[in-house]
Length: 166
Image 1 (cartoon, rainbow, N blue to C red):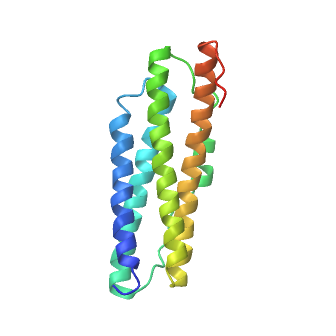
Image 2 (cartoon, one colour):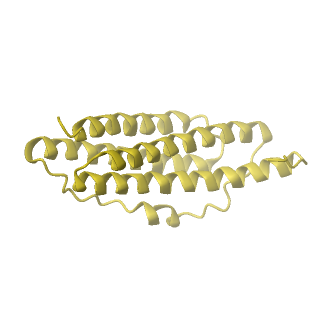
């Protein structure tokens, strides 16, 4: 397609599915139960994003339109949970949890940047607004994961009786 929107959406679909699969796979490796619950919610959200993008592709191929509502409100999703108590557990488990959280953060950061670049490059205003909204969803995920990473990291270093210089 001349405007590249279908190519962007197909790539986005692949990335959302990869994100979902990452969270699903890593849930078994995480020791922290609250973090497992968050990853479970992320699996559901990424699946919702994938389903939404599939519908967008179908609609755009048929009608050249991207006008499909999406029910999820990422801004409030995590407010339902108390994320203050994500820390705890033995130090070895915490290091694995930190590694997985960092990977999750990077995945969401990659998604966010992809959608932002797509929004900059497309000329279609409807697509531009769609990609900006998708970038915002991923930015919300990224910020939540960073906050969790920071809190768990601080707890880890406290347990280690050491404060890194960075």
